[in-house]
Length: 127
Image (cartoon, rainbow, N blue to C red; front, side, top):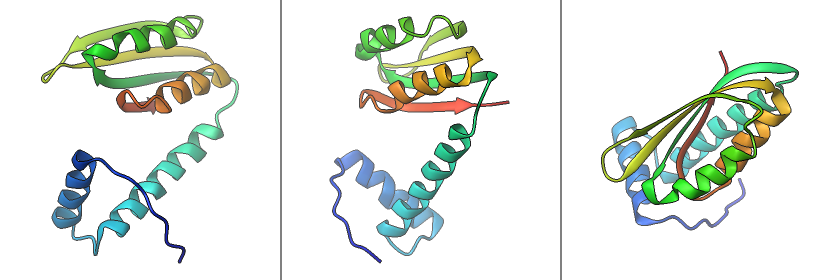
């Protein structure tokens, strides 16, 4: 097995430790491998999408990143049918986008949010 080095902030490291202990993983590496397998599985399922689809995109982000969310969402108004914005605790916001359109556009919108480090959660749901 190849050994790699990664950098994690204290918050993520604490969560990995918590997950390790609560779920009985043998070590941090096993938690990270499990998370990586989930990410790969989700990516493969999204990659297969084609044609016109309906979906829901969930975002959680800090209130101060609202401009970033607006910049991205304005590029994809052609696939957004509904957007709901809600304020959560601890200066966080929840965005719910109901999407309808070509899968390539929806995948690109999702990718732009996923690769933006300012997002706490990005989850595409395909019914």
